[in-house]
Amino acid sequence: REQKEKREERFMEVKRTNQGKIQSLQRQQEAHQRVGDENFDTSHEEYNIYNLKAALRIAKTLNSIRLIYPLLIRMLTHSSKLDTELKIGKISFGEKKQWMLGDHVFDIVTSKNVATIKCYMALVLKSLLQEDEVEDILTGDFDLKWECLISRIIRKERVSMNTPELLKLDENRMSEAMKHDKAILERIEGGQLSGMDISSFQKAVNNLMKKLEFVLGSRFKGCRLEVYGSCLSDLAIGKASDVDVSLYIPKLQQVKENFEEGELSPSKYAGEVKKFIFLVQKRLCDFGNDFSQLVAVTRARVPVIKGCYLNAQNPYTKDNSLAFDICFFNDIAIRNSTLLKEYTLVDPRAKDLMLIVKKWAKDHKISSAADDRLSSYAWVILVIFYLQQLGMLPNLQCTGLMKRANYGMDFNDKLNCINALNTAFVPWYQVQETKTWHSVKSLKNTPISVLLHGFFNYLLNDFPFGFYAVSIRHTNFRKVPKTAFDKCSLSFFCIEDPFETFESHCSHNLGNTVNLRGKELITDLLSKSVKNLESILVGKKESQLGYLWDPEMKKIKTKSTEKKAESEKKGRKARDLSKSSQKGHDKLTKGGSKPTVKKKSKHSWQDIKKQNTRSSLGRGKPVKPEKQRLENLI
Image (cartoon, rainbow, N blue to C red):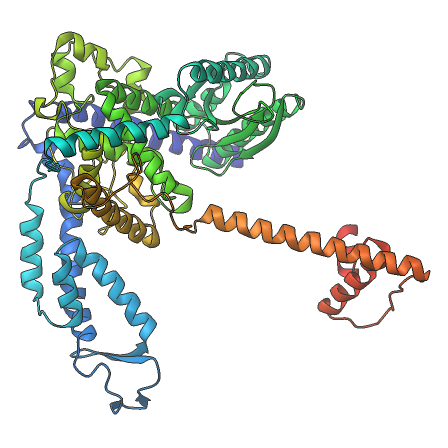
């Protein structure tokens, strides 16, 4: 009875806290609606509260720089840092060593550690100062006091995000740029679906959806399946792209609601979700003639079941199969894909630029979040933000535009409120009908290749990524300081998700996936792409039509390529071992003798392993060591 009472008290406590969270989210959502309005007064108390968190983080960052900068710079640029005759106490200078000398502290460290400190200092300073100044500071040629550094930071922080500048070309170069546009789009569309291809691929997708609805619908009553991702947004590159499917199960939704109301503990909720995932996987495995390669990924941010439908009649695979990913609780992804689709309808050049940037990122292997790079979705968000700054795309999430377009933002509609997030946006056709937004007329005939050069140049030189976040939701009425996010890097882009914004209960920075190596690689590629593309468009460099970047790229190591190489290496070793074992078996069978294993009272684990490999040459199976036998018996 006591245990039952304690359990009930614990559940009631969880329920009260969760209900409190839900109420605070509702109040927060109402405040967001007022803040999102263009006519909202930015001097309002609530607006200042939203920026308080960001302002506190800026203060902490400046205080950290104030303390660390003068200490490290003095140590890195000290005149006696390479003094071989210097000796402090028992510590003396050695090979590949360097003194770190300050006013009150000292140490002797390796040259490798000094290089690492310099690298991180350069990353911080590059986001705040000009590149030539950074080199002078780190070499000791330019002494910048911390007071001057802080004043420069504050001055730069006030810089507004100006409209991106585009390359100016004469008529001849403009016509040449148009030819490049046509050629590169033909290259991309050659590997993309078009015309009859779309209908045949769509039939394969329909076949998959019908089969999944039949298989899962008969097991889980009331379940719903919806396609999202590149298949929905029409931004797929290549004919072998997989299909992303979102699965809704009423019973699982009920479990989620019980957890939100505090009736389920987190561990029990996680167990229930896993149970449903494996039930779906088992149901698909029952139809083994139709589905293969089924893998359940339960520990992902969004649980996934990966698989392949064998009878999809997909004309772009040898066995007519179609790969798919089934996700749970991913209604937000469907809404994201729909938003991207709406932006592609505004201007055909916007869609073309998105596809070209995705292709560029894919060719340079910087379009996978799993490899510590930016995801292809993040690259598309960057393109939309850039075109919004140019005036080529509107902000479809702006409440002012919704009102002018007579779009009723009803939060009782499930599409406008998913996971307690404001997911409302005005459809493009409604903006067209009401004629409430017009693009900049001067960009009407701008070639895509010029827009591409402007995109690379904007990210590399114009956008103040050291201070502000990329936000396609707030682009019209305010700048978002990147310190508004819990996790962000001073030396790289902070990219706000359109729905999981910094104000929401689950803010999502799409730039967090990039590691230090990825930052350096992306910055280097942007720099090279700007120079290469400018020389092609201006006429300084001759290039084959449609090849706006180097087609013969060096192989870049990523996590996926390293894993693939490792698995291939293991496969080669296994094949070599099987061949050697077969040769040994043939020799022994010809001689007519069989190997025997001598029993010894004391063995090391390594000796037993060697003995097993020797005996396996003759019998085909290794003799299990005593430790392994005991484990099997247990």
